[in-house]
Every structure is written in C-alpha cells, then in structure tokens.
Image 1 (cartoon, rainbow, N blue to C red):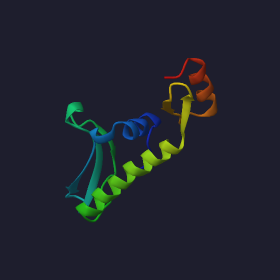
Image 2: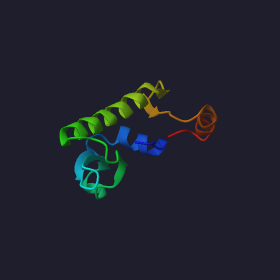
Image 3: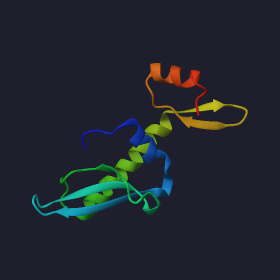
Image 4: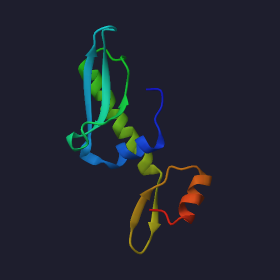
Length: 108
C-alpha cells in the first residue's frame, strides 16, 4: 500500500462494521490482493487495496484486518475532547494550520 488520504483513514476509522475486507487471487502474478471497502449499503465502494503482494488468502485477510486496526488505533490516539460539557468527541488528524482553521469554523 503506497499511501492513504486523510479522508479515507477517517472513513475507515469511523464506519465501524460497515468497513469490509476481502481478498482475491491475481492470476498474472500468482499473488493475493486485499481490499478494504464499505459494505453493501454503499455498494462495496473501494477504499484501499494492497496490490498483488500476499502468498495466501489467510495472510491477505490478516494483513487487511491489521491495517484497519492500525488506522483506527492511530486516529483514536489523535482524538481530542471537543467540549467537556456535552462530551462530544471528534477525530483530529489535520496539520496545526488546518486544525486552527477547522476550529475557527466551529469544528464538527
């Protein structure tokens, strides 16, 4: 996986059980490809793929599960408490400049 956008990471981190993983055999390379997609409600919209890299379906699925877990863990660490009174949480993964701009506009 070469990279991931901030919005894709946010979607993976916040969509819960709607995030699905899958694997398929890529005949030309003889390797397995993993996908992270949204569920049937979103017509299995693709979010991320691994490319033909893995040697087995089990290895591919385990790697995709770990990828989802790592993204969620990373964004959870970067979570901040927006308002102590109403306990509204939001994920903050913007740069400091974007963060100031975001907060000045009222946040979520």
